[in-house]
Length: 330
Image 1 (spheres, one colour):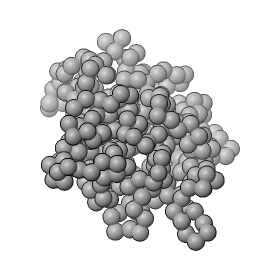
Image 2 (cartoon, rainbow, N blue to C red; image 1 turned 30 degrees about the vertical axis):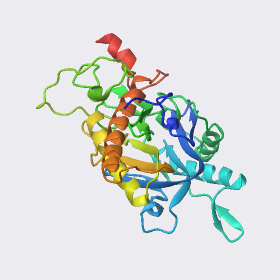
Image 3 (cartoon, rainbow, N blue to C red; image 1 turned 45 degrees about the vertical axis):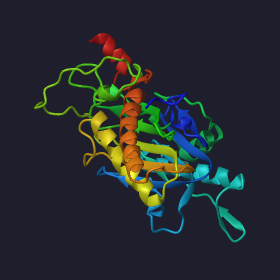
Image 4 (cartoon, rainbow, N blue to C red; image 1 turned 60 degrees about the vertical axis):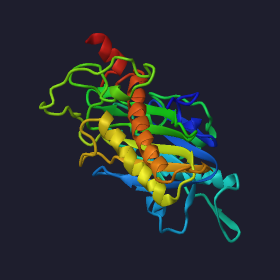
């Protein structure tokens, strides 16, 4: 298995990502857009999630496909980002057909970035406009680190960020991950710069430092900022999956979050993973290939988490240093 040509979720053919940011507010929005509606699912393991339209993603619901997925900062205010995306898609003539109307299906999830040093004294909720701007910016190439939904993200002791990675399986199926890393826990080992995700790194994609030393009995490091948590992600593939199979892929991908963030899935995180499947490639072996797909999703997400923090850039009033700044001071 090797990364795709971009090492981004957009290595999955037919998918684009758009980012929009407000660096004064220290927040942003990321949108995953399909060239056509795609099968989607979701699995939540955190204790404090914030979501829109995720009930539609259960396998027994009427609607089986969506037009876009949205990751946003802003806590509950950020749920409005999906409204901006839905309005723009409707203007493009996209959406679920109901009579003479089209209703874009745009599930979304949010993270809490309201205590990160940004100016939150807005007079009008900025997230609807950020959602529309992110959709307009959708492209195969996009920025990671301090970008999109990861703009104002933090983790224990470090600035967080937006991460992405991809892998192409031996059977030709592609898996990609997109994640806004804003965890209560830590992504690095002890006081060192080595990432928990180090065993899964490919070609030095997040520093190439290898595995560090840590005390397995030490108390886990967590942030001191109350409520400033939640890691939200999308796992995508060009495999043909039912909604139930996509849910299983999202469930397996949570292993990657636990490998890259310690602790993860806490009562104070709203950790959530969407799955997206474009359906371009059939699974040659529905059992063994589904197993390989789940494993690839987990390892790909672990890499994307480390890449997002590794790529973060400093800005004024940041509550934590970037990984690069902290590494230089060790």
